[in-house]
Length: 391
Image 1 (tube, rainbow, N blue to C red):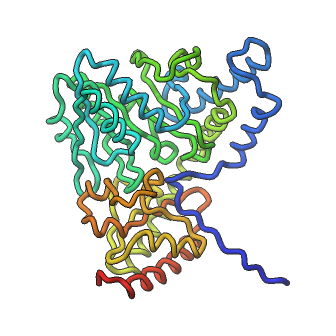
Image 2: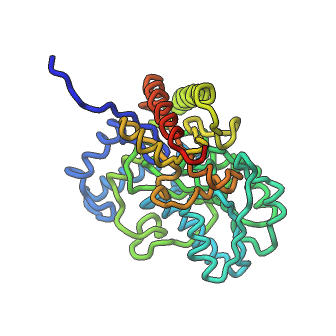
Image 3: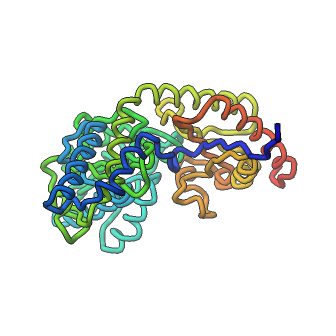
């Protein structure tokens, strides 16, 4: 039999994006061809598309315990974050111009504060976190003021996986009359979520983190919270988000949400088992490492590791040569040479933060994949440390 030189592929960056599941693609395909109508059209072809949007909206709503009318589709999780934070700031500016967030938010949130709101005269407070990445409820309570209009704290961190006590933080905000937003892009499909139990006013989501397509997200807006629209033009999304809907993408989001709900328990159990196996092997077999984030309240598939004395990018490149895909942090900021703002916030020294790698497992990860990764990782770390000037 002829030998093949085809390189093995192991994908361990599910926090960056996930592959579209076959069932999701199958649901989407008709909306590129025979069911191509514009949902705003009154004839049958358009109304069939509109009906598909309604069905998808119901599926996303069911996954988070919301009403369908509380789910508004966007082009991404980033757009949902911008909509919730910037528009709430403007909408509530008559009451006050103070907004609170944390130092470890996604850049979609941090840049909304630094690059827009602050330049428009808003005051933004960036709460510190402890060494595991938790926002202290007491810190939030002390930061809240009479002119605070919004608090935005992400549900689970995209780099270190720490899960925040969202219900408690939300209650503290509401006690002082502030609205509460959470970026749940990483939490969706990885944790049980019920927006009614949490009490949040807004929640951002994205399809491509739950085995759906890229280019579609959603914002949950609690019934009775009359957040103004962010995109202006037509009457789509109940007049709050203009622009012809990405029907195929939204249908894919709905199917992905449906599958996520059906498989949530088994997905969490498998991801947690693989995560813990990887952490155990890493800590037992590679010296001078640090696991970043909470060990108890952590996303089931997240392992963020600092390898002392070497550069994370060098590790990434050696693993990539072996067909293994990992990340040095958030995929949205991986091109930056700046140290991770998340690792800095939890106290990782700047030099060490450059030696950090994020492994995230998912539905197609196997134990054999992790064994192969550990084998290649050990060789990479040994090679890099042998030539490191930091040792």
